[in-house]
Length: 411
Image 1 (cartoon, one colour):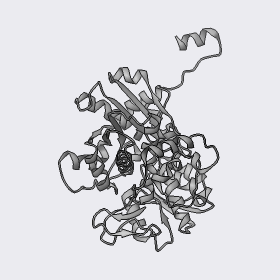
Image 2 (cartoon, helix red, strand yellow; image 1 turned 120 degrees about the horizontal axis):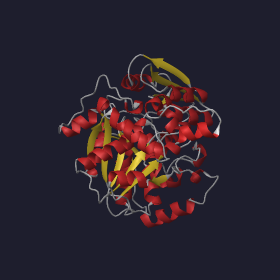
Image 3 (cartoon, helix red, strand yellow; image 1 turned 120 degrees about the vertical axis):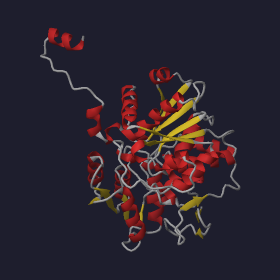
Image 4 (cartoon, helix red, strand yellow; image 1 turned 60 degrees about the vertical axis):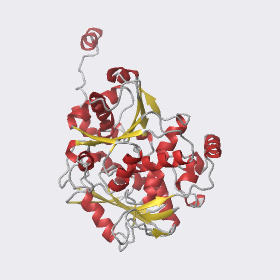
C-alpha cells in the first residue's frame, strides 16, 4: 500500500508514518489492486468465515488483501472485531413506508463502536513500526477503542478529551482500559491540531482518522455488508458524519469492490450531520469548494460534535463517486429516531440514530423513493451515552407486589 498526499500527490513509502504532507495536505492509503481477482477473493473471504482463532476470524482481517496486504500477521492486534449484526425491522419499515431498511450494528464491536474496524489496522501498523505509545484526541468512541487495542498490545495510550460535551460513559470506559486521559479546554479540532503538530516530538503514534490506516481498516465495514448480502447492495447507504472518516472509508471500499467486479453497481451514499455540527453539509448544499469550520459545534449526539472534520476532502470525493447527498437533522429528530431503533430491539447511541432521522427526512423530501432499499450504519452502542436515555425513556412504574397492584400499572 502506498501513502499519498491528496493535494500534491507526494508519496510516502509503506513504512513511513505521517498524517499530513509537508504541503499541508492529508495523507491517504492507496491500494494496488492489479493482480487481484474479484471472484477468487469472494471464495477466499467465504472460506475464512469458518475461521475461529486465527487473525482471519476478524471481520477486518478476513479482508486483509484489501486492507493492508504487506502487514506481517504477527504484528496484528485483533479482538475479532467486525462480524457485527445486520438487521431489519418490520415496524420501522412499515412506519417509513419503504421497500426495505437494514441496520448494520457496528455498535456490536468489542469496544462498542465502529472505531474498532479502523483501530485494529492503525495499532497493528504502529506496532509494526516499533511504537509502544499511542495517542488520539476524542469525543469518546475513538478513545475507548484505542485504549482497548493498546492494552491488548501491551502498550500505553494517551487520550486527549475535550472538557465539555463528552459522554462520561466513554471516558470511564477509556480509563478502565488503562489509558491516561488528559482533559483540555477546547474542541476536538484543537486536540487534532495539537497531536498533528507535536505527536512526533512526544513519541506518539497518532490514531485519529487522520491516520490513513484507520480509513483502510474501516473499509471492511462495506466489505462485510456486501458479503452478508451476497454482493448485492441496496440502493442507498445512510451514514452519520462527524470527523467523516466513515464516509471516506465507505467510498474507498465501494470503489475497491466495483473496480474488482465484486459488485455490479455502486449504491448512493446519504451522509447525515446534526444541525449544530454540520459544516460539511453546508459546504455541499451551497456548492462551495472549501469547508468553513464551525467554531462552536454543539449537538446532543456528542460523537458528531466536530466543527472541522479532517477527512472532508476524501469524503467529498466519496459522495461524488456515489452520486451522494447530504442533509442535516435536528437533535429532536435524532432522539425520536433513537427511540424507534431502541424499541425495535436493536439500540444505538444518538449519533447512530441520525441515520434513521436522515432517511426519514430524505424520504419526506422525495430524495429517497419508497420503492428503494436503504441500509443505515449504526456506529455506537446504546450504553455509550446513558445520560441521553433520560430524554428517551419513561420513568419506571412503582407497584406493591400484589396481583391487583401489578394489574393496575400494567393495564
